[in-house]
Amino acid sequence: QVQLQESGPGLVKPSQTLSLTCTVSGGSISSGSYYWSWIRQPAGKGLEWIGRIYTSGSTNYNPSLKSRVTISVDTSKNQFSLKLSSVTAADTAVYYCARVRLAAGSDPFIDYWGQGTLVTVSS
Amino acid sequence: QSVLTQPPSASGTPGQRVTISCSGSSSNIGSNTVNWYQQLPGTAPKLLIYSNNQRPSGVPDRFSGSKSGTSASLAISGLQSEDEADYYCAAWDDSLNGHWVFGGGTKLTVL
Image (tube, rainbow over all chains, first blue to last red; front, side):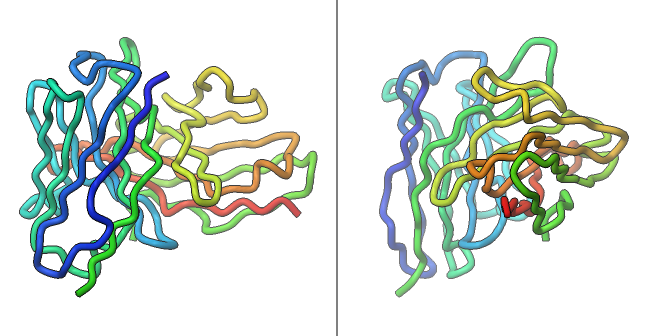
């Protein structure tokens, strides 16, 4: 059973860079059957997709965050990471890492999520 | 403002059948399949339905999904108290180089 675990600072100052890492266990991040995503959820609100990365390193980002987001992968550590620059209070949210399954004969779908980590932007 | 539109709340009594709608557009639901997630309080979303109407192993057959045009629905039959949760729909959107979009979530209350 695959497991995803987010880690990183729970408090970030305004204008600084938020950095999170997702460690994947129970399976290889290098499998071509998946790609990897970050998703966030402000308190009491809905889900917002941040971006994705394939193990080849190819990325796509949410157009609304694209100028501030970088997602990278470290296959040697079975991890992928998120950096969000110039943060403001509006970036306060629970951040989830997730696996997207590339299933033959069907569209991709998000099948597993990490437990989520709360990041608060405050001075 | 979420790209996919869901009712903010729904309710039913134990044993009843409840449906939750999800409305989108031609670039998301109209072009791609819909997935549904259940989020219990304080926990991560859990995959409930994928590819419009497929259930992962372990998900009871009380849960079913359907799609027509640019709308989708999640149906829960034989409602149980443990079904009280937030439910989200999701789909890939082909616009702007592609991105996942979600509904705003529907809070289901079992009366």
